[in-house]
Image (cartoon, rainbow, N blue to C red; front, side):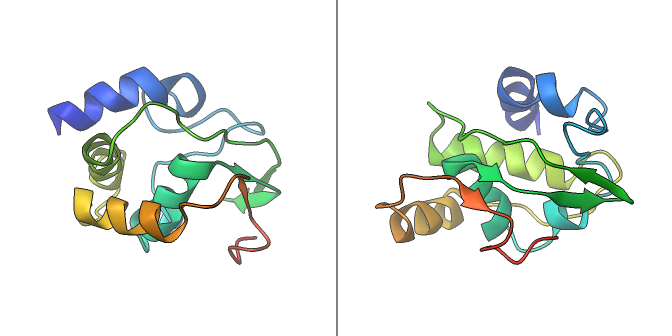
Length: 122
């Protein structure tokens, strides 16, 4: 958890805030987030390639772009996602570097951010 907090503090905190509540209506919350604790493939994709498009969380629509997070390795991504999935009221499972590598490898040719539409998010 300490490693995940360190990565979060370095790469996520400016938008999603120290308490995971984000900044409505620009940056969505990670606290009590079904996306954060659901299938880990989604947030892995967000970190690797970014995300754009409207997303409604708790009745608030967010339509800013999350850029890909550059300079993080599979272990750091696993650490930060495990931190998020087990903090802010979330009760998710751990994410492993092997899970991150599988998603990275499966999408190695991707050069654009994911869209909420192609991922089935609303």
